[in-house]
Length: 330
Ligand SMILES: [Fe+2]
Image (cartoon, rainbow, N blue to C red):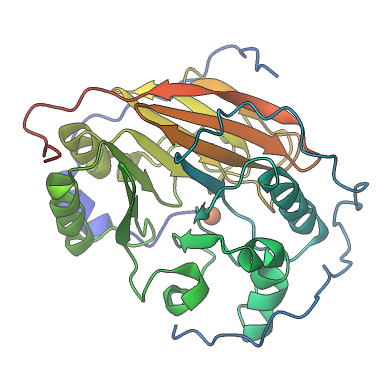
C-alpha cells in the first residue's frame, strides 16, 4: 500500500538509483488530546473468528541472553501490536514474565499501535489492558505512529508523544528519535537533521513504522523513504534503526554500517511472509514476537522472543565509530 507520503517531495529529490533488495537463497536462522479512556478495567481479549487459539500459560522466562548490567539502558521494542486479540495478550504476558528477569523501564512502540476502531474503549482493550502490569510497574511507552494509527493518537498521554508526530528523548548515553513515517515532510526532515546534528550522546537510535530494509513479502523495503532518510543516518552516525509494518521479525545485515531491525509482530502475524533475502541476517515468521534490548557502554544487546517464550535471535552489536564532524560529548 502506498503511504500518503512525500510523493511530491520525492519527485524533486529522489533521483538516486534504487538499492537492490534482490533475494537469494535462504539462510539458516539460529534459532491527546485523544481522549484518555476510562481507567483500564480488567478487559479480556474478545473471542474473534480466526483468532489464534489461546496458548497455554506463558512459559516462564528463561534463558536471558542479555547481560542485565547495573545501570544499563534496558528497553522493550514492540510493533504492530494493537489488535486487542488473544495473541497480543499472550505476547504481553511474555513481556511481563521476562521483565521479572530483565526489568526494562521503557518501551519503544513501532507503530500500528491500534488497529480498527480507535475509540476510548479501544485504547483500553488494545493497549491499557494487555500492558497493565507493565504500566502499573512504571514502564514508560514512547510511541511512533503507523499507518493504522489515527494521527490524533499522538495526544494520548500514556504514549509520551506530547502531541508531537516526531520527537526525541535521552536515556543515559543514548538518544532516541521517534519519527512519523506516514508523513515524511520537509518540516520533519529539517527537524531530524537538526536533532542528529546536535546530538552528543554516544548512541543514536531512530525508530518509525515503515522499514527502510525488510524482506517481508507483503511490504518489503520502503525504498522511497530510504532515499531521503538513509543519507542523514549515514552523515550523522545513526547506530540502530527499529521499524515494524511487516508482521515478522528480521535482523538486517548492516547497511552502510547501520543496524536495522524489523519487529512488527507483537500482535499481528503474517506466517510465512518472510522472504529471506540478501538483507536477512536472521528472520522469523512463525509466531508473534517482541524484542528486549540493552545498551551497555559501547554495545547494544538484543533478544527476540516469541509469544510462547522461545528465543529466536540474540546477540550484540558494537557501536560504530562516529563520523567525522559529529557532535562530541562534552
Ligand atoms: Fe503498518
